Amino acid sequence: MLSATTSAFFLPTQSSLNLISGGARSGKSRFAEQTALRVGENRLYIATAQAWDAEMRERIKSHRIERGDRFRTLNAPFALHHALAEQPKCDVIVIDCLTLWISNLLLQEKTDAQIREDVHLGLHAAMIQAPRVLVVSNEVGLGIVPDNALARRFRDLNGRLQQDISGAADEVFLAAFGVILPLKKLVRLAAEDNHA
Image (cartoon, helix red, strand yellow):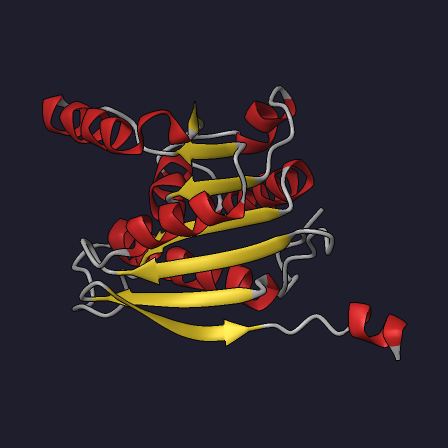
């Protein structure tokens, strides 16, 4: 388990973790889905959104229609590690998105350490379930400083968790204007060392 002072996530190394971040309508979700389609046939899409109102219900419905039957969908706004325990293994998991997941946990009045622990447990469970995990997140720290404490806490927590995940990820991408910018690619040398 993580302590409040731990500075990095420790995740299973047999799976590949990708973080895709960007602003609203930047192309990040589309990129994650297109990547997943190339990875394997057995794909799991983890939706963290909650349908609070008619507009959000329509948005969720539209996304489901766009994905069609190419993904199995698991709604998991909170305890992702528990929800994944009941799922069969798959080729790839898309978690969309980290930002809503954090928001859901924040509204449960959890501490930052508890939220960080929940995210860590969820990612750990996902990486046990699938050899490739893609996490979609919103970049919310590029605008003005929010005018209230809760919004500032949310912004800061999202940024810190993105740093945690980026540090553990094999690949990190930033989406902007529909263009995907690769920021990090970890070259796994273990396999090469075995052949040396």
